[in-house]
Image (cartoon, rainbow, N blue to C red; front, side, top):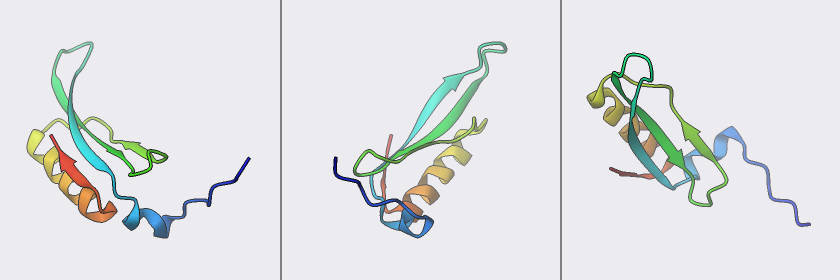
Length: 75
């Protein structure tokens, strides 16, 4: 089996991929929240944020994450 090169913190800017904002709902209170997801270009690195209560802040976080990782934002 061929070993892949490990990913280091300095590699984050070249990950590329897709950043999305997903809507969720709290099971107890039924309040709506948002989560930012990132999947790298190769699909080997994924990130999911904690719940964000405000949609505008979630969209801002998605934009910042996309700029940092070289990804694109999709809705």
